[in-house]
Length: 634
Image (cartoon, one colour):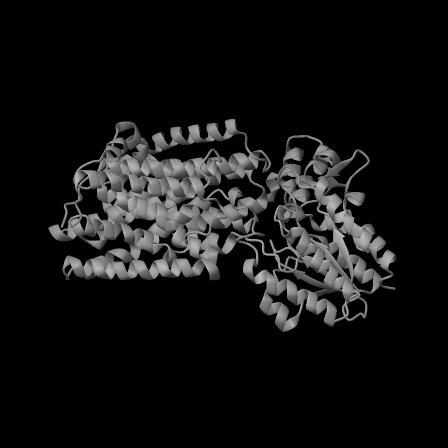
């Protein structure tokens, strides 16, 4: 079996991985730079396999020494970054955000970050880019892998290398199949959880086992290196956040990493020599600290800018500060702990480790118990922030629910007068106002909604949050329900600007309206509300803290029309067919022609583009005028 020795080219490969991740997270290039994490996974699998097999061969492997080394390698830097993030969050984060940071800190300390973010990251769980410890999910995957993998490998070591290879190959294939299939059934779990990510780490183990048998000639090694680097760069450049991942799309960066490691095993290719150069190796050496620091810095800066997009200069500054902190962290924390210059005795290390974990857990639980310590903020700032908390009428209907029990009801339940609101999350945001009018006018309302799923027959919008291919069945069922139950009115609402670029948008909308109108169902279309420049509850809260006037926050009608004029003209064209077209601007735009972010001390939005409950209630006159027009309700 090939001896396990230090390879500077692998540190160089780490540098490539972390640079891709940093550029992706900072929005400075490489829309698929998230594949850098997959490069890390393959490298980790390779190195851990080599380390365990080397020590087993020498007869000095013990599970306790293995895990102590993992603690020395992983915990000191990550604990320091988490402490710094939690401390800074006290001055920056709103109560809800601070409470969530405390929960994610608990998960991180218990090596469960991936499970936490799988359960707490979604369309309505707040923007992922505003969660300071989101990036620790990948550390949890590796930590969980390190718990079970040594047992498996030591057990297999009683057999010859070929048997070990075959067993790991079977496990790798099984995990990959689970990953590929999971993208269709549960993409979030597939992304975050170990069983569907393990194949990437196991692939690294296969590379280590195979490298002794595979020693290509120089020209072949050079070609393999080129292909390997091309696979990583291709994925990093052409993939986007909407690319289904991991699954088969993860093959390009993972196999690319495997090729680069294999091709440079016995002799460095020209690419290997570039990776092994001092400057690149240095970035690789600090890559762990760099990965740890960059994300909290970017996220906390976004919170300080009230959720607005950071300028290129700000993002570059964040990366520069990350590089500085990573260098300090590597020199004064990572290296001394790894070389046993600090707490050399295992007993002292474990005591210190247990103490810091206990400290972080206690601090996090106190923050959580105190609901994020709201006393840090002015009452008006807290009032604005509370707009984020409401989840009224946020219901993700599925085909099964729609088929088994029909749309959810609201308003005056049991009335013979009926209306349906149908659409995506923007439709959900309108329901508080519609519900109030339905109760006043004695109308039963039905809610048929799902995020990123427009109310259009035979229209498919691909999104990790939508129904995707199932939307055809869903939307057909809504129309069938409206016709069968003799619904008086169907209200269509959605983030139309997102869908209108598709060539089938207008034909599908026309067919939807035609089918409903042919059955005597009245149809109303609600125009899209203006999108604000950032997270409104956060912007309003920050304006109070800075002593600024919240009334000045908003989007002008002119700015709104720049992106919606053509769309709104097209939608208004349906009024000639007897379709009612409702414009929220009639209520939400003030006498200065501004879509106000707040009115009378209440936030009109719960994020940058969805109306808050108060914002929706403001639309009551618009819905009342519609009911008067079609003589619906008492």
